Image 1 (spheres, rainbow, N blue to C red):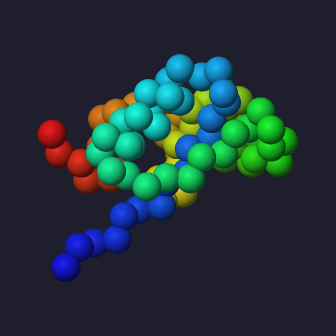
Image 2 (cartoon, rainbow, N blue to C red):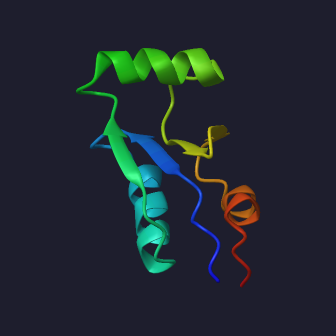
Image 3 (cartoon, one colour):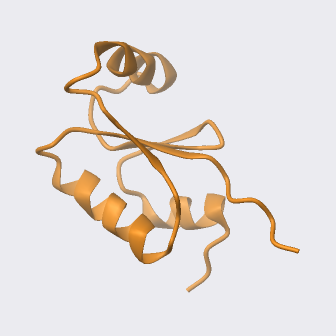
Length: 83
């Protein structure tokens, strides 16, 4: 039986290159995610700031655990991805 995939949310902006890298990585690994564009959603930007103290993107939430930036080792650990 497969374990359910953790819930993944990525806070992004359209101009963020690391956001694109993170989304491409999730696509390559077949990880489903929800993208939130904080440049269009002020509430989401405030929520991200409240959770992390950061305004920089990407901020990735995996089962509500925040990762600031595209930190592949931490992402892999929380998602159980092994190379």
